[in-house]
Image (cartoon, rainbow, N blue to C red):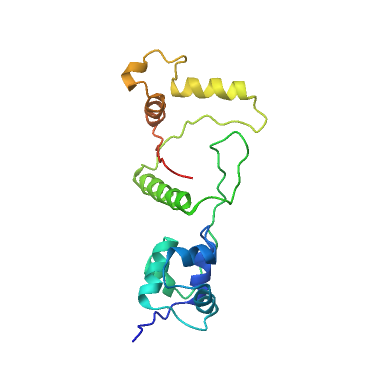
Length: 182
């Protein structure tokens, strides 16, 4: 017999809205779940099994117990701006894998911030919206003590990324790197 997870259907709807996933994608990622099932579960007409609910919680990157909360949290879906190109980028059309990595990075950042002393002084340069890019570039190079052209490339095995990462991390900035991502 099927062991039902008597979850809050509103939490199920909330969790899906927090992800970049649509019903079709969810059903392709979890075998045995159909769009019809999902719609009935979200409407509160039926309940998923405990196994199905656990798979959904994992996919939504939330604790399984969160599906049982009586009150739905406020929306937390932060707008992500893809800054990997010079264009403004699309703010909402990111892959699930990138979304999951960003959530992991945010979690790590929050953990690190909880370890920082209260008197931490953030002396990072700040700029007005209309600041000339030449001024921004020069200020950032000075702040991070970046020498251009790179004089000692061999110290980093010719890997310029490692040079910049070392300079940025020396100012207490947490740097993450991922590869093979859409």
